[in-house]
Length: 482
Image (cartoon, one colour):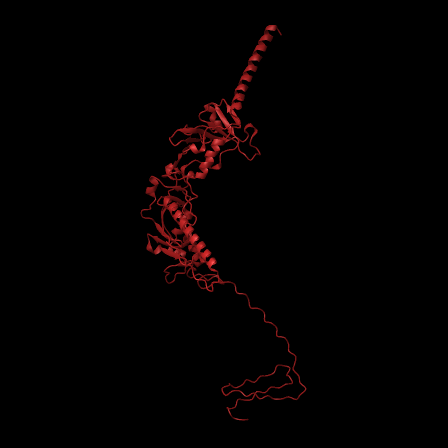
């Protein structure tokens, strides 16, 4: 090889080495600056007063109003503050465990970090998160991308799940965090952020009175005592021929004991609810003084593209109102027969009863205030919640066998099965008696019956004939001597 050629080769190799070292130096410098540090170290959780979320379907705005988080697009309905707290806390403490540098805009879709609204596919578009102060100033803005299972050797068998994140203010860099955001970030819609845990709850139901557009479909069921189970339910004003089945009315009698809803209706949905003239109205009264008026409207129309053969809608529009009355003073306790308590014990028991009474009234008023704040709104509820109020009066009765049908073996005339009757026990064998013998000659015994006695029946001895013979004389008139 000539010297000139050797010098050219050395020069080319030197240029290549410098380029590699330069590129490695850039990535290394970036990692040195960011790895192990908080991405938003200057953001304080208490400064966050509004959050804007968008995953491509709809924009969600969460904001603090009167000291509480609400969902702006749902007329200020309370938001799930627990999930908001998780989101904010996660964002302000997350650290970069790895950094991808020189990532241009056209490559962000690989990490599912394309911004919503830019025309990207669903599996290319990330979730946009923006934190704002009370005055609207932006505290932080970032995108949450896909999970980075094998990024930088992480993931695998580890319990943590790394994820890609991009700070909107930093160009050409993608961070990898060790632990992904929680499951609730997978779907971003307004209804996902509603507080569905602290909803109305009917406790200690006493009676439920249902009215319908057809009066004959209405019914009233009630309990006479607090705490009784379904079997103690009774039908008010039962008509002749009605055979009430408490089990069929059980769910209706406990309506809204643990209700749920999927969304809060706004805008055009309110006009479709049909609650101005509701199909069903139930008035529920409780043993602790609450009174709920629950109205059930139209079924919710199926979303566009829903399967037309899927049957009736599984959601209904519904609303409620609530009121309550509380006693002003504690009722006098019932007298205890033969009360042997000391005066101090009686005084202590009285004080404890008064404290419980006061605490119960306080809790009742707090419950009323919370439930009133949510009353009057139009809710979209699963059919399973309101279905007990869709039952007609006839549907609360025991089923009767079809006319002309042969009765079921072992059933009563009304068609209900009777408990099996055990077959009669086998007769117990009478022990064999030995003949009674005596060494004396046979004797006769005269038994003198009363005047009103009936003629005696001759008793014949069993075989073999005993040696003792008993003779019963015929009855004689009173006073006559034989």
